[in-house]
Length: 355
Ligand SMILES: [Zn+2]
Image 1 (spheres, rainbow, N blue to C red):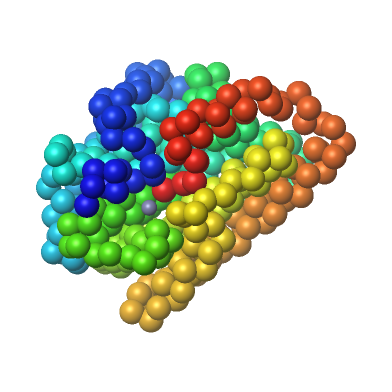
Image 2 (image 1 turned 90 degrees about the horizontal axis):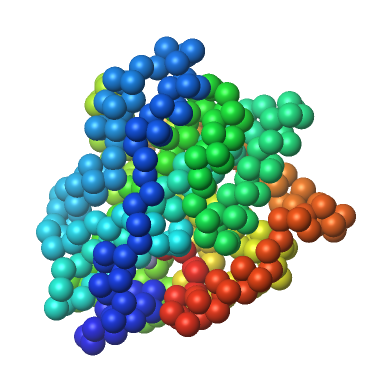
């Protein structure tokens, strides 16, 4: 296989160095913890607990777990795959499989911050659907995530993070739900990328790229569901994945759906791809897997969470169209910046089609 074939997402091999080491790290751990504490101290959260959480839940740890499960389930250890996690202004994750050099999976800092805030805002909105203030704030913040973060590629700054925490208002339940779903999505997308590398090393060929994407989703979802089932037997302290998060990968697809929908409404951009299936088709495949009898666990809370999620999903779409028609979104539309990004995407031929 030529080097070019191995570079997923049409990234030119020359970009390797830039991709592997490019981007910046925008994390400010100390400030992050202080901001969190300000809002959560009243509910009894301590700095020690926050640091403990960091130790247990972090992306390197999740990557180790994913590899462990690949070894166990598929006999593939992926020892040569490294993790890259910096800010490259893209919410997409991807894998680079270059036979000459080490392989790596990239998961952008922008992805982390947008997914986490996405879950926070959507669950808060769903919980307090009839509270007009929450409703309004959550709509605006979701619009900000879609427009500024996903479409235009700006990473939320300290001020917007603070605005988010004000909306969440120390709601510990929402914080827990969002982070639990977030980590399930991290596992899913890491496993999806490792699956590409596994197919490659096993010499598996697909008749078209879409088939490979569905298959990578299937492998990734299998790993997520296996972990959930294995961990359902563990006590609270050792549990990393919660049962009620089992539809988080579907919500992740819907996140992309909302991103493309917003792009279409605000900028008339139609994202097409001849390599990646649309989120809607991928969702259908994921549901078929989740409903397979061999995955037996308690789905009641997970279904409930997803129902609430869907209410917000529909409401956001309806409101977005209404507000656009009434000219209420003119201020946030930045066509020039959108066009610049589009040009850049075309140049690198990496049309922004997730995962
Ligand atoms: Zn893929």
